Image 1 (cartoon, rainbow, N blue to C red):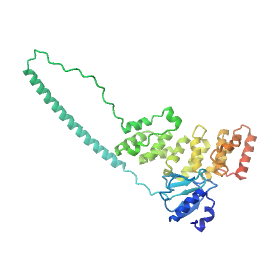
Image 2: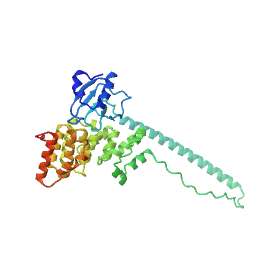
Image 3: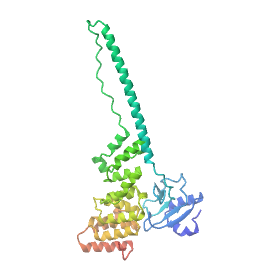
Image 4: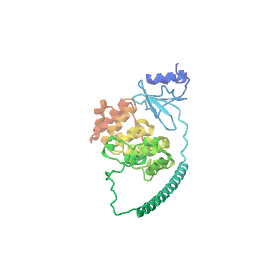
Length: 367
């Protein structure tokens, strides 16, 4: 089955793997709502927006197509190829109800009160039983002839107390300790625990995470996974953090919480100040997926004005987003990119002119 006539010409420019996927969906009764240019596609690509979700049998990676489950107001899932220039997008998911944290807290407090009352009753019962036993023992002992030594029971070997069970909350707190291995390997908090936590435990985890500002990408990731009203307040504050790594983490882990305009402004700001070991990597990862014209203009501005090491990465990203490189840092083109890392203004200007020629622009957009 062919694509409808209004879309046929543009449909033919898509990679064969994505055309095969869409053709199968059209045969199954799905429809193409639109073919658009811009985010999430690169400037040299495009996106097909479907009317329905893809059949579950095809909703997976394979055959040269990568599938990603998304949770944002724009689309529910995306299908793309390795270079991420073209996309097939599902319609956005319905909005999820916000958890009633007040009701959860009230239920937790009621259960705690009941547990306290039950414990008090059990302690009183045990004290009464122990007192009766002590009185009975004393009465019997007074009636016996105590001149003979009482037989001694064989000594029992001392037993160590059973190990204290590790609770879910203790495991979560322990995962928040950032040791060298976790820092080096980029390991976040143990968010798998959220899937098995009780409502009461989720409240405790929320209290832990919201008792301090988000100062690390791991905090942002955990708050986004929790996704409660209190967590969202902290995430909104973190969006304006002075550290580009924190603000870009909000866009990466909680894209549905911010508007495209806010996300654009954050990236433009980050591209103007992020450093190689200060948020540049996370910013470029975000740019690879979200690159409206303002962000492209900021890359062009940075490749001319930023330090040499940063300009190397901006030149690589511009080549990729314009379809002139195989990846966000194409190692085959590394010798060319490294020409931007020079203190010689003339060499830098020559590299810039060559970049414009390779991409095919005469006047790069102004920021």
